[in-house]
Every structure is written in structure tokens, then in C-alpha cells.
Amino acid sequence: MHPVLFHLPGLDFPVFSYGVMLGLSFVVGWYVTLGLAERDGLPKEMLATCFVVTAISALVFSRLLFVVTNPDSFHGIGDVFAVRSGGMVAYGGFLGGFIGSVGYLRWKGYPLLPWADVAVPALAAGLFVTRIGCYLNGCDFGKPLGPDAPGWLAKAGTFPQWDKAMGAGDGSPAYVQHFNAHMLAPDATTSLAVHPTQLYESFVGLSLVVLLLLARRRQRFRGQIFLTFAFAYGVARFLLEIWRDDLERGDLATGLPPHVLFPLCYAIFGGAFAIGFAHLAPKGIVRRVLQALAFVPAIYAYVTMRPGAFVMAEAPGHLSTSQFIGLLSAAAAGLGFMVLYRAALLHPEAAMALPQWDDPSDHEDEDEDEDEIKKRSDKTASRKTSAKKIEKPTSKASPDETDAKDEDAKDEDAKDEDAKAKASTDRADESTRPTKAKVETKKKLKNASKDDAATSKKASKDDAATSKETSKDESNETSATEDEA
Image (cartoon, rainbow, N blue to C red; front, side):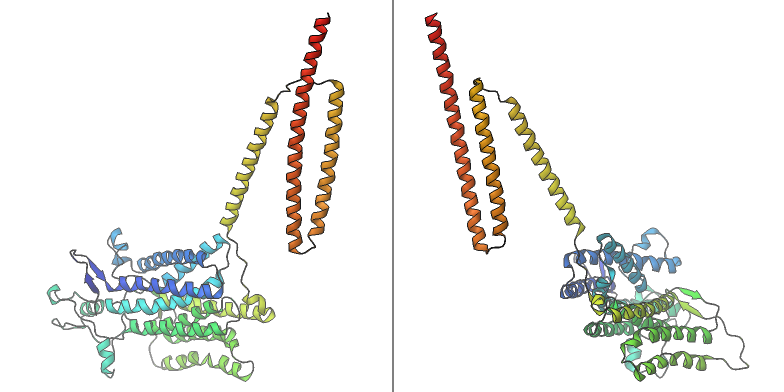
């Protein structure tokens, strides 16, 4: 057991094992989640941001649930943020991550289930890693082992007093709890041998990774992997809590005797499996047998836990916070699986279809670009209008010349309209021709536009010269008239 891995060189700052393993779980989760997302064709960049939001939300809620269920463990606001050495609830992290994912994906307009299917394998991998950190820290331990327990298991479940100089009663959480409960001798240096439930749950996490990756090969609808994890972990966590013995778990009184409470819970698990996940088995006798076997644990628990006829009334049974959440999540997963599985049978292609996601921020950028282009065009038009207002005629032409110019202008306009109509007709014809012909037509049109521009420019020069000559002739005529007079 190594609650502190090392101290930073030159600083008296401990680096706790739990904090290191928690950080490592996020690194593993990052690569697993984004790798599966890319393989499934999901928007990787958007989901990378979603992973960060989910991770932060999971950390906040996992700590919050621990604070709510253990208010006596905190003596100030600073204790709430001291998370390096542990003090988090796994189900709080799962619920917090779920809430964060729903909020972010709804804001982005993307469905939850495709993301959830690629996220839960990383969640299971993180469970495998972080529970090793719990074992190194000594928290989340189990009940004392019996005298017949194997030696290797007893050794794995023995937690020491960290430092003899600390004094009696100081050390690992298991040692402290056993010492305060007067279960140890005053000179004891280790706790009692207990179930190493941290390692049990770490093994559960690794098993879930394998189960979920295998389930991906036969996936029939979006959300199937997520619901499989919710059900399987709910059942496993409920059973693991039976062997847990640490006091920092939260406790819920039910008012039911244990021989009724626990068989009822097992029946709920069995019903969720029967209406949901049992349909993955071949239709017929195999499926019916599995559905019937799902209720065997409930019947067995009732028979073995039922008190005798002359036994006094039992004390009400209790469920831990994680057992209660696991029971609800497993039941909800069974119902959700039933609904989505039936929909997949009716529309198998739609059940596995992915949405054509379009980032709303891209449309915002496009709208901004269009607005900018419109503003520029408006400025250009206003400048042209101002320039036309400033221009003044240099000479006054005679009425005959004005009429001639108007007729020429009308002829030019008619020619331009004919040319435009012909060009549009040619474009319509060219749209049905090969690409090479379209390119040649575009070149011809471009050359024609250049010729028109050159002709127009030459005509404007000729008009200017003619106007100049006319003005000169008028001045000569005026001079001659004055001489005659």
C-alpha cells in the first residue's frame, strides 16, 4: 500500500496515488473515446470538447455526492476541495458526466446515444484504473475475511498503519476504522484481513471493457452499448456493496426486512433482464429459459434469508447510496433496451443511422461573411453614385447631335441585350455538353467581353474627339461671324 507515491524534489509536496491514477484514467479515456468515435464516423473535434465537459462535470458531481453523503467528514470549505487523497463516489461521477454530456450535446444539436456508446468503454477502463488508486490509498475496503480465507487473499486485504511514529489510531482507513471500533490490539500495526473490494471492482471494470467491445460487434441500435454498461455495472455494483464495509458510503433505510428487501431487488434485476437484454438470445426455448433463470436469484435469496418461525422480528434492511442508484439505473436500462430493440426490429437501418451533423457555429460564420460582403457592395454602390453626381458635361452639344447620340445609345443597348440573350442561350446549351466544350465557350465569352470592352473604350474616345472637334468648329464659326460683323 502506497498512498503517497513520491514528493516533488525540493518541495514538501506529496503526490498521492489516487490522484495519479485518477489523472491516468482520464488520459486512457481520452484515447479510447476519441478512437472509437473516429472509427464510428462521429465528429471527432466536437466530441473532444464534449469529453472535456463530461470529465469536469463528472469530477464535480462525484465530489458533491461524497460531500452530501458524508457531511460529518468536512470541517471547512477547504476540506471540500481536498481531493488528491480520495473522497469521491463513482456513481456521482457517472451521473455528473451524463448530465454534462446531455447539456453540451443538446447545445450543439447532436444526439446523445452515439456519443454514449463510445464513451462507456472509456468509463469502464477508467473504473479499472481508479480502483487501483483506491487500493493504493486504502479506502473503499471490504468486510473482514473469515478464518478459512486463502492466505494470498488475506495478505492482499491487510492494510497497515502508515507510520508507527504517528501513534495508535492513525493510518490507513481500514486500520483507523478497526482501531476505533476496538477490533485491534493497542499495539497492532495492521488492520484485520478484509475483502479487497477495490481490486474486485477493478476486475469488474476490466471485464466490462471486454464485454462492451464484444457487444459492439453485434450492435443493433444506437444506445445499446450504453444501456449494456448501465445494466451490467448496476448489478455488479449492487453485489459488491454487500462486501463493502467502509462507513463513507451513505446509507438509506427502507423499512423492509432483509429477507424481503434483497429478494425484491434481485427480482427487479431479473425483470429488467427478462424484458430487455434476454431478447439478444435466439428466439424460442433458449430465450425463455434465460428469462426464467433471471428470477432464480430472487427465489433463492428469499428461501435462504427467510427467518424461522420462532425468530424475533428482523431489523429493517438498508441499502447504500450506490446500491440504490445501481438498482434504479439497471431497471431503467432494461426498459430502455426493450423500447429501442423493438424499434430496431421495425427499422433496422434507421436504428444504426448517424445524423448528418452540421456545426451551428459554421452557419454563424457564413452569415457574418455574407453580411460583410453585403456591406462592401453597398459601399461600392454608394461611391459610384457619388461619382456620377460629381461628373459634369464639358461641352453643350446641338439638338441634332444629341438625338444622334441617343439613337446610337439605343442601338448599343439593343445590341447588348441581344448579346446577353445569346450568351444565356449558349450557356444553357453548353450545360448539356461535355466539360471541354464548356471551357471553350467560357473562353469565347471572356474574349467577347474583352472585345466589347475595347470597342466601348474606343467609341468613348471617338465621341470625346468628335465633341472636341465640334466645339472647335463652333468657336471658329463664332470668330468668323464676329469678323463679318
